[in-house]
Amino acid sequence: MGRKNIAISCLMMLFLAACGENGDKSVSLDDEPVSAENSSSSSSVKSSSSNATSSSVMSAMPCKTDSADTCEYGSLTDQRDGRTYKIVKIGDQWWMAENLDYESADSYCYKDTASNCVKYGRLYTWAAAIDSVGLFGKNGKGCGDGIKCTPAEPVRGVCPSGWHLPSYGEWFALCSAVGDYPGRDLKSSTGWYGTDVYGFSVLPAGISFSEGSFGGEGSAAYFWSSTEAGSGFSYSMQLNSNDVRVFLDVEYKFERFSIRCVKD
Image 1 (tube, helix red, strand yellow):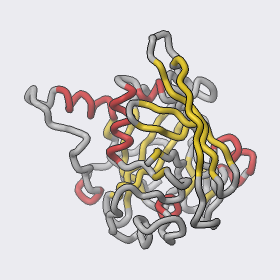
Image 2 (tube, rainbow, N blue to C red):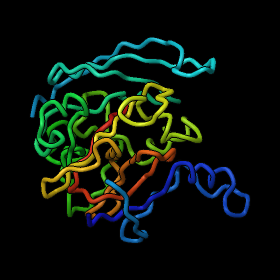
Image 3 (cartoon, helix red, strand yellow):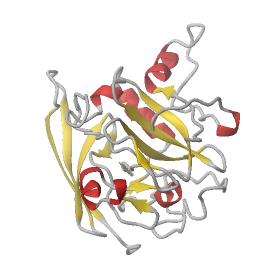
Image 4 (cartoon, rainbow, N blue to C red):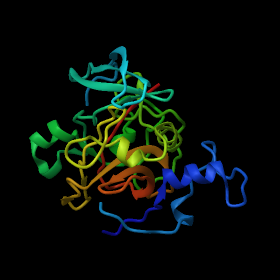
């Protein structure tokens, strides 16, 4: 597929953060991600108003687990198109618990089928995710494939007002909050094997490739971050079927992935 990535699992990163190779801490959430130009590679499956606002209603209820933990859930309404999304608080972060389905330029339904947008949300190029045209904010303006710009965080991107495209560090923080098996506990309990302990409900939405083909439905999910890894690459978060790990990978910016937004 011609994709260059770093398969760094959150599980391994958490282990290194706790122990390090020599028993001391060697990785933290403040560490800079590795540039794609200096990384090793591996392979795996793979226009609306700028004054838009959003609203959320939050409530606490038991987590979807046998523990006594309390999770917070609510809803987010994207006033640009009236679409309402479930949201969940995991650790100190509020996340969308469904994939973004806002129609923008360079966004696609899986297999160009509208019902798949309803089911999975849309698939976006990194330039669309980061809002390279500056329709909703300035931080991602001018960024895109073939351009190294390192946008200032947070980057709203194509997310609703008050929310933004998660950075590498925010994806890592989510993995840390979930624990040892994020690739199991963040997945939906339908569509593939997952426990959906926190109600994050990741579905295997697959990927759209730059040449227009599609793949990975039922076996993989990919999400963009706002953190680039060179002029042609950016970090993503990836889950695969039959794998309890989550991967923070370097991917080509021209590929088309799902989006989960995180609250400002």
